Length: 153
Image 1 (cartoon, rainbow, N blue to C red):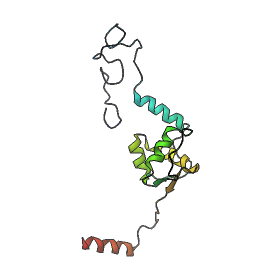
Image 2 (cartoon, rainbow, N blue to C red; image 1 turned 180 degrees about the vertical axis):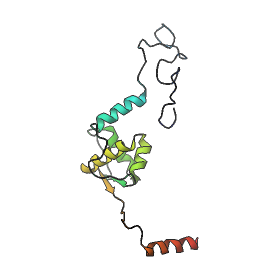
Image 3 (cartoon, rainbow, N blue to C red; image 1 turned 90 degrees about the vertical axis):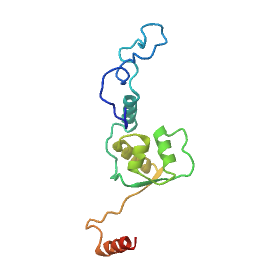
Image 4 (tube, rainbow, N blue to C red; image 1 turned 30 degrees about the vertical axis):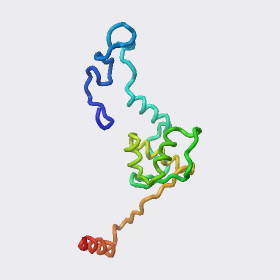
């Protein structure tokens, strides 16, 4: 498995069935744990958890760009009354991170990260710093400053 994705194969050791290479502790057929497909892959149970954590939502309640910067609203660690994902995001955001970084560091889909960060912002657990996007693009003065800065390099 690479980058969180399955290889797509369906042979022993691919996460789709019992591994025939490892002996089982039951003394029965080697590698057979008694269930037809063994334990569900960790990835599947993780996705089910993400579905439960977000309440099945795939979009945040408020507009949230993936490049938006997120910082923790408190210097203290969140208590056990908060879900694990909230605690981890709060800890990660002691250093300012983008929503895309949070998604990558936690290994969760971007949509899930956006929903979680949006919910945390609504609860006052994180601060979201939205990017300033000018509809007309950068002005000529800014472009001249960037160009002169590049020439100085």
